[in-house]
Amino acid sequence: MVRNPAALGSSLFDVATISPRNAWAVGSAKSGAVLVLHWNGSSWSKIGGLGFGYGLVEAVTAIPGTKQVWIYGTDGTTGELTAARRVGTAWQKYPLTISAASYLISGRSIAAASTSSAWIAMSAENYAGRSRPLIVH
Image 1 (tube, rainbow, N blue to C red):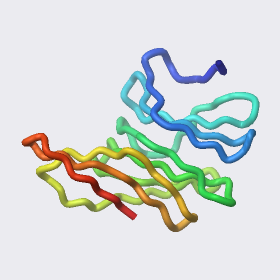
Image 2 (image 1 turned 180 degrees about the horizontal axis):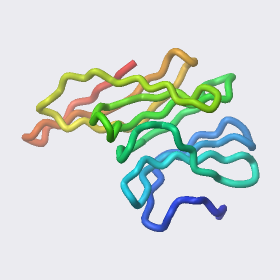
Image 3 (image 1 turned 90 degrees about the vertical axis):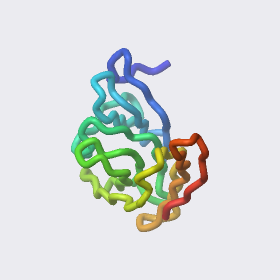
Image 4 (image 1 turned 135 degrees about the vertical axis):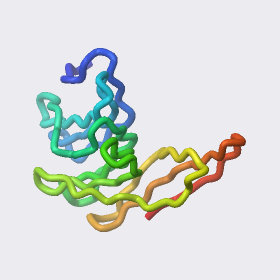
C-alpha cells in the first residue's frame, strides 16, 4: 500500500497509468469536492485547478503516446456532465450537452484515442427504473 493525501472517508473510483512515474486517480473527497491525484513515481499529490467544485469525477484515461489524460464527471459548479483534458498544468473542460431531463445519467468509463477524441460509456435510467446505454464522443 502506498500513502496518498486523500482524507479518511474519501473515495477513489478509477486510475490510469501513463508510465511508472505518471499515474492518475480520481474520485470524491470526504468534503464532497472532486478528488484528482497524481503519482510522480515516488508519491501521490492532489491536483487542483479543475474547477469542478463539489462535483464528482468518475473515470480517468491516459491518452496514448502523450503525458495527458481525459477525465469524466459532474461539474459541481454548473451541474453539467463534463469531460476535461489535462494540458500541461491546466485543464480544458468540455461540457457534455445531453438532453435527458427525465433521466438519471451516470458514467461508467472513458477511453481516449487521441488529444481530440475520447469516448464515454454511460447509462441513463428513467424514473420508472428502466435504463438504456449511452455512448458520447
